[in-house]
Length: 201
Image 1 (cartoon, rainbow, N blue to C red):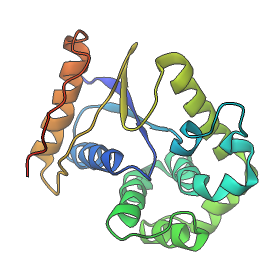
Image 2: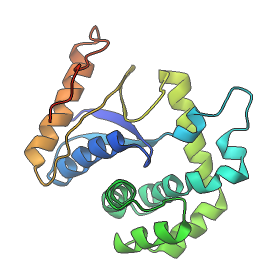
Image 3: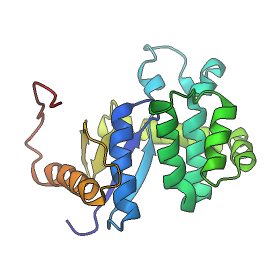
Image 4: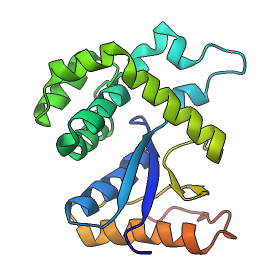
């Protein structure tokens, strides 16, 4: 594939999403020629029982949505800072054990990534980030039957992927990892499930 366009879902709560999005970020910073849509997906909404209140409409769940909403503001209003903020939000949750439901934590992460946290929080308060979050989530479910993160969407095909490695600073590894996923997705739609029975240590 030449300069493929694809989407990858994420929720900052998922360590496997962290792994894939680190690969994406490292490779993109090194010049990988992909057109990537970073697509938010709510694991909280996935676990709402049928007939329950959607997370978008439940005030008690608002803190669970904050980090992704803030990330969406950066993605759409400050794209030059998005990869830094995106990776930092994952790192705060999974490497540092910080609580992304706390506004003060999200503010600190944004500031460290070079983003005006006051502006981002003000945009979140306007409501459009939640509307975009909901739209993207519901579209992924309706069009591609997405059930989790990270899911790659390439054209009409979608695949849920778990990659165990993190790239560190290895841009070649990062690009090779993503290209391998895309090749399987594009060239082998008959491969429905491929899962190792043990995890290499």
